[in-house]
Image (cartoon, rainbow, N blue to C red; front, side, top):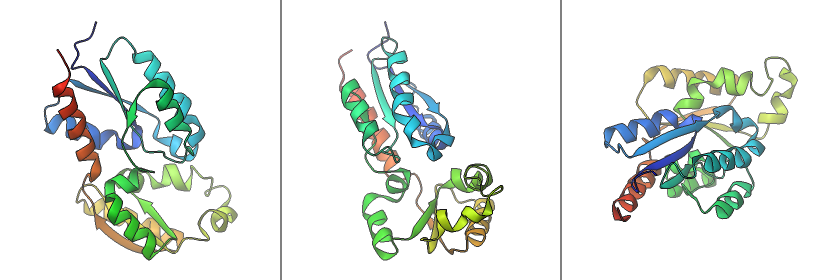
Length: 205
């Protein structure tokens, strides 16, 4: 049987680097991270069943399970799975909200509803996940259908990396969008994992 302090974090692959960095920096050695494919950003209907499978496979091996996904376009289906399984997730509609912080994200959305967001991961993998992932390399005529209602691209940076800023700026140019850079750091992700660690400390041994 696992020790009561053993925690599994089931995470979106797009958050793997940030979560692992936080776990290592804070020496949360009782936390294990398992990720699902980042490509599911483009097919969010796969997320609820994928998370459920991970949860059920972990039962009996971990004392607690936490899900590092927001709703991520599942339309409440992920929350229904988590309710049935008795597992909590990080708050928010998507990673852009918890990286920026709910208040800042609301302000950004109010200022320009037609905003497309990038994180470090999406800036790094724009070609794979957006350009090729959405089929724009094969069907460029789809560009107006996907991006015709957008006016701005906001890059929410987790780390200060000029190479990623350049890639994000290039993505905005390709999409024909105004570019804005914002350094968000890890935002509410840090708070969510710190709260999880604090709860872990109160569990009976």
